[in-house]
Length: 355
Image (cartoon, rainbow, N blue to C red; front, side):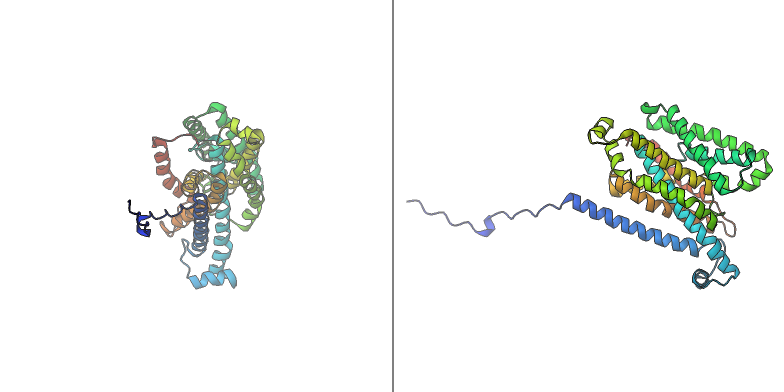
């Protein structure tokens, strides 16, 4: 007679595997946490931009200048120079970061950026033309010339790069060629016109030193509209990343998306360049940094770019104020020194492909 099998003990039953974490929920938590960190970094760099400058001012005097303004020289520096400069840096950084992210998604080109594709150079050339030959003298006039130049060069580079058949490298080469030609034109005009040279001496290298409350008020509406348009493009740009046919199947309006994107890029680059001159590499570096945290979702990339780009721009501006005290190194020079190695790294990546 067979003996009954002994009942299985709990030790002989394999333990249930712990439930796998919900990947989308984890990804969302990482994105939200990263965004909170980015906002904290932005707050810190804003404080540093107001507190640190080529002229050392004690923190208690900075506080006095912000909240108990009495017209002393230090109060004037803090309230009338550093605060507008910081606010303009936030706006211009946001504009360049969003423009770079939209350009990279629209062209599926990891090297797309307002400086590399010649958009900033086009805006600058138009402003210099307006100053030297057409009598432009105020920021309200600079902005419209910058818009026209940015739009024209955007179209020119797209055509030279091969239009719909453009590759990342061809677009980068077309943009670099256009930028070189336009910067040569700018330098020739400025050197031959002493009045233009004096007026645009710092502007042509990218600078926040001329920031005033009026500058902020004049560019704010254009950057606000451009930023709103760019942030609304997250979902359609996600669809376009899957290819035109798939995007149409998902209900995306490709022509409308491209037109809105070009309007947003023109507004953002034109306003930023009119206010500060050509500042390069901000729109190249930040979207790539954002993708490390957010993945390929353009809705999050655009938000991160809007927050992190001012951090980089203001950080470069603060660095330029302290490394050559009592003089200042213009922010456009600092960002070029920082961005050059990043650009070389991206070009040399073996798996660099369209986005």
